[in-house]
Image (tube, rainbow, N blue to C red; front, side, top):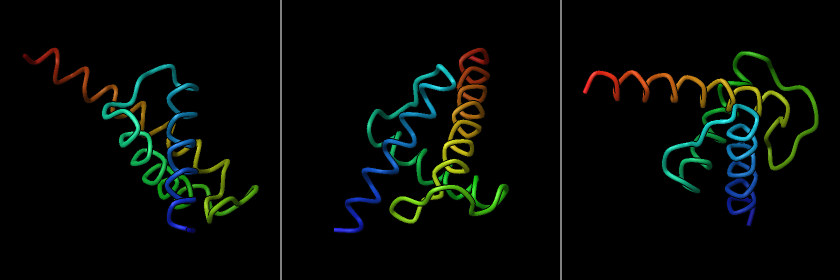
Length: 84
């Protein structure tokens, strides 16, 4: 059950990051979950483990990390589209 809860929280974090940045995450729900997990890892690595924790995610660093990840992905995707 904790794995399912982690998937839900990771998806919500990825979705919130997409809303904050104002860009869509490629891959829909799966993309949101992946962005949430990778963003949480990135945020915890850079900013540490502070703020409220839900499903073993430090929410504030996870959202910041996911927002940075979404920005990076959008810039990379835009560069590939221009190269075509």
